Length: 279
Image (cartoon, rainbow, N blue to C red; front, side, top):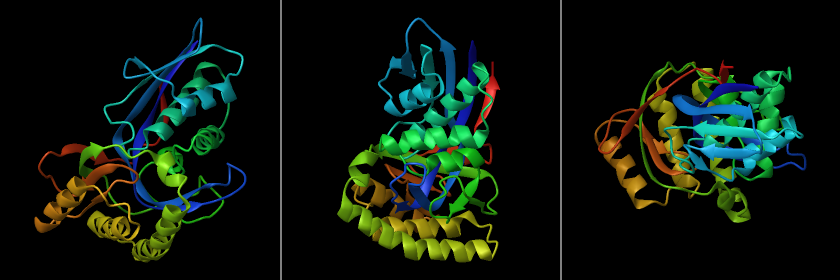
């Protein structure tokens, strides 16, 4: 038995951590968007369980959690592939978990709903401190705002059209280092409150201009204390000087922008959600 599935990368511009005792209630509010590139997961029954990422054997605890939750007694071989970098703020742990869940469901006839599969992937992220909000975006696709505390899969679509987005990756940030620092979390949440209010106002006005949302995210990156990498800051300022809008990808030492810039790669803001692509 085998199947494959895709889940998009998810870039977050703003996030606010919602603490809860139950992992299915802990998540992040915020604003972000999915892109055309992501993770493809191929799953099949094997002689032993194994996970690989871009051809290299990888101890991927978040994906292992999904496999054990859905197929606890079957040895599964999971092959993950992505052009995007791990630990760069592209939500690849969430995308890997969700794509794996979708592929397992199809390949082994589990007949679970997309929301059930997404919750399993989300819980895997929470328990392994690899993310809090990416799976929601990857389930729905598009540019989204999340404002419902206690519901990790609730999101509202923003009226931002699909378009080219430019990014540059500098260095990893390990999400668990941020999520386990109480002082940093408090500063993040304080900055998020004001800036999510601004995003909500833009959403109520049905603003379609992506640059206006990015400008709010830029303010959050400063006020949260997360914009520390000199190269990231210089790049953002250069884009702004050229008339574009840019901000830091959360959480990664990486930049996303509305216009091309030196050293940038191009992707596309895409409304395509996670999906099965083959069996």
